[in-house]
Each structure stands twice: as C-alpha cells, then as structure tokens.
Length: 167
Image (tube, rainbow, N blue to C red; front, side, top):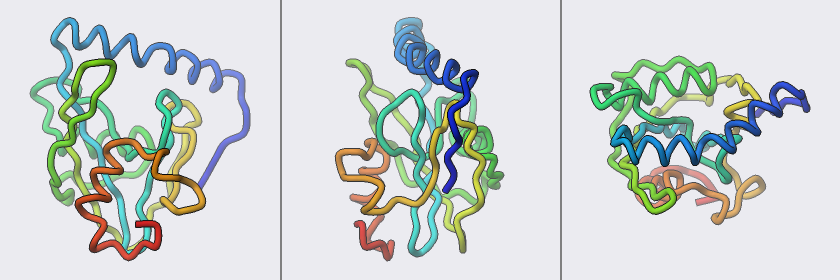
C-alpha cells in the first residue's frame, strides 16, 4: 500500500527498535511482566492486510503486547491498529479467533487473534518506524517462509472462506 523513503531519524528509531525488542522481551519475561499480545487480521472477501514491522522479519498482522494483565485483548488489538496504521476500529466489531502461541528465544507468548471484516481495506498510515510496510498479502510479496506464525495460523484455520489465490 504505502512505503516511505529513507529518513535518518526514522532509520535510527528502527535500529534502536531492532536492538531493543529482544532485550525488552527478555526483561519482561524475567520480571514476570509478559502479558501476551493481541493481533488483528483485517480482511475483505479477497484481501488480507499484513504489515512488516521494523524489528521483526516477515509479514505479520498489526498488533502488539498488552499494556497490563488487566487490559482487554480486544481493546489492545483496536489500540495497536490505531497506533501502527492510523486505522480506527471499534473493539466490539472484532471477532475473536483464538490464542496463538508464539515462541521467542525460548519463551512463549499467548497472543490473542481477532478478525475484522470490511468491504474494502482501509487506507493506512505507515510510520516508517515501527511499521515499514502495509498492504494486502499476495503471491508476489510473500512466500510462505516470510509469514509470521500468526498469519500462518490464520491461513491454516480461516482461509477456506477467503477467496484468495494465494491460499
């Protein structure tokens, strides 16, 4: 959908995020602060929106960690979608799909996955810091090895009703 050009401040933020993400995850787990996460599969009848985060390889859904053990995962998915893409979704419109176990350096997160169906994929804002690319999943922009576990989990369980050639 949209990709930004090179910008030194953005590049520095991406560099710090790449270095800081694994450290942050390890510290949170060590201190018992890991609360899992929430991700959102946005889709139409023919398109599935995926993003590339600057600090992890592969295509994933917009989403991220819960702020606390008390934050509702549905609210977290809606919040992360606004933060990462500038797209407002109503939390009550999100359909709960289940928990995806994501391993990271020997530890496991329990990430909640939600789905939001829409008539057309919304226009997104890519900040070029946390998210460096966003667009529909297709054969031309991803091989199966480029997909994060949340996207693979979704395609295995829910792609049967998606009219995508890719699946």
